[in-house]
Image 1 (cartoon, one colour):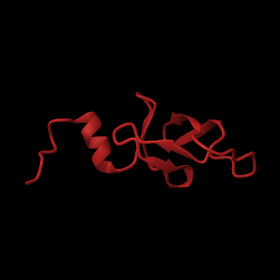
Image 2 (cartoon, helix red, strand yellow):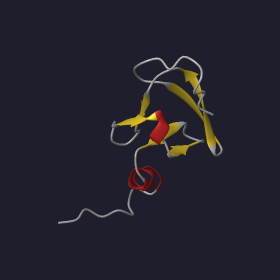
Image 3 (cartoon, one colour):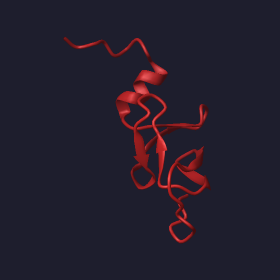
Length: 75
């Protein structure tokens, strides 16, 4: 649950990932993708793992983390 009325902070947020939601522990504007290290703005955060407590920028990043052998390099 993103508190839009609290202090927003700047830089990287610390987030607790919950089932279907997340809680901002330390204010910030983004979190980092656990796979690509890309910045994910909090208002665009859609993918995360409750068990691993990490965020993902794309569905492909989720697959790479949970099923590493499924995606084959294209070329």
